[in-house]
Image (cartoon, rainbow, N blue to C red; front, side, top):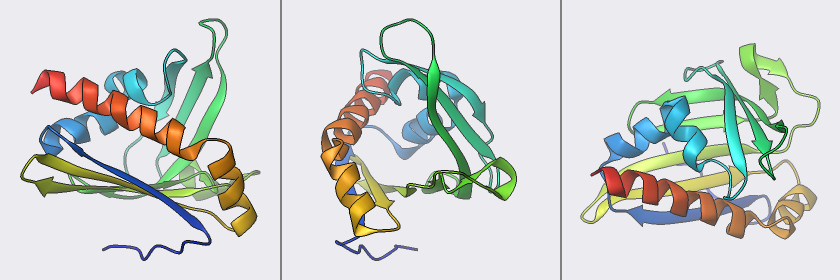
Length: 158
């Protein structure tokens, strides 16, 4: 199911990754692989929780300078369609509990493409102000960088 894009509330980014969907799925669902690409280098990521199922948690920590790790993402998976789609939000935390500072719901889709996999991220916000804030914080640079890192990880393995 494709969610319509609302340009006032949503940001989207996509890329053709020259690897099969199975390799990208593994990089999204294996904590060790996920930590290698989820935050823009040279920052480091640590996966604290990754329970890839509806209601399961996704908690990551970030280290900007190689020192102490601080909070990054505390989210809940909403939908998991193996090999095709992952939906998560930070409006909820694990177990469907409401979060204190909701900001996004993201839909990651993977589709076959003659060149590999069509990878798309559709990130929804509750308000135009939040959408614009995310864009100003560097959505396209940040999400673009991690998609490039994901591609580099999976393309070298296939």
